[in-house]
Image 1 (cartoon, rainbow, N blue to C red):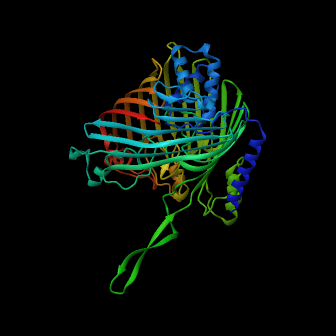
Image 2 (image 1 turned 90 degrees about the vertical axis):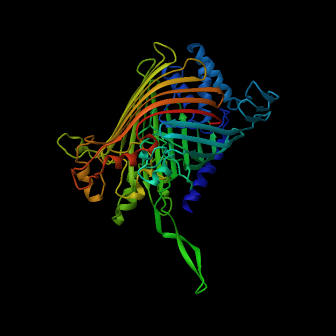
Image 3 (image 1 turned 180 degrees about the horizontal axis):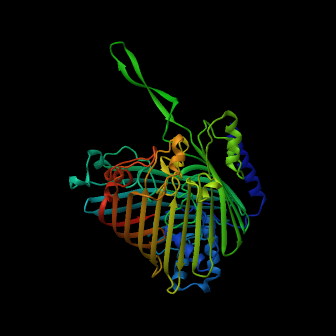
Length: 603
């Protein structure tokens, strides 16, 4: 009850303040999905070339932010080439409602002022004459076919989304996507050591798999994978900030391939979030999320009538256990001391109390300190807290350098060479060279390393996961990832790229409480147990707004390594085949040449 009253008090206060200030920005405070990668890439291109200033540490951006950035680019269009101007006008049309106008399309039923029913890329837009109510509705439909020597997998999705803005202070949005993976692969029995592998053959994402695909929670299906994804929220906002209740994916930390702070790899989580931008050089972000533990709570269950005993004429009951409660609170401060330096830092905590803890609803707080206050008196084990930071620098035009640091636990003595124990930390560094000597050409590179015991915990209920998917970098602890991309944008809406990824997972440990010190005393990045290398060529063309054609051909080599020796009591040993089945979907095991084609509208 205390938490519920706290939220309503915050919401009411924010609403009163928003209505008491003039709305200087007429836009929707609705998140732009992380899957809109080409739009995000275009904004990054403009930032790297010095056309706009943007803080990349926290995503998704809101439609309000994107519309403002595009308007800024329009004001500096003399800095753009012909292709960039065409892309800019294209995206400005997508964000027409945010600019108090109606979209223009080739085939549409419209009065050019208040409504537009588009037929080329199906969508209905509505805007009242006084600009106080805006709405757009669009269907979502898409399919993608993957083929290799192991067979074919068809991914299809359909659904719809709606977005509304009321009086420049309230945004409401929602979407539903029904998705399925279908595949009759297993044409050769050598690919499937067990029958269970055939069922999992069409599933390309799973909590144990080490790939950057966004995690999902499958429903029952014997043909592959079937799941639905419902997102949405409500936001109260004004020019200096917003408070929202939503279910969305979160990405914290500057990265192109995968962030090591919050990667958005796990399924979207419901959350109460706060964002404040009182001045141009400061941004503050906070959220409190309800995670999914996937752990049964033995003291919380329903009693279900399972059967009837005909001999005694009495019911036979069964206990249906509910999940253990799990939550997360996090904040991030972003400072921009000058236009070419952006610095962010923050902290978070994953905790598993019976009810949300009111102390963790304090936005500006050091959560580990609060944790000590709440747990030390009862001699209870601490909750799972983290600290992190990210730095982005634009030293010269066309070049961006960035890095992120994540720490599960820090002891300063462990940074000494003489100390065998190493801190469970993760770091990521990268660069983006864009627009020189050829406009539209971009070279990106990232290198990530996570040390032993990073992202892990001896208490399963407070691990850095949701729906059993890791919330940090998808490779987990004691792992390394290398990513390179050479891309080119020849014309408006078209993107072609050559990408290389080299992911390596090293020896794994049990992380029992009594053996953690032994584990972090082992040599990190010592002996590999799994490696996946992939070289791919990708093509994407946005025909109309949110209507995409995609194609990809890739070569990958996914392999496991035998580990039979044991360095310490907590080390896990296993065969190459065991590691391969644990970390890779069947479809990508071994050496493969895979081709894919796709089409979608919506996003």
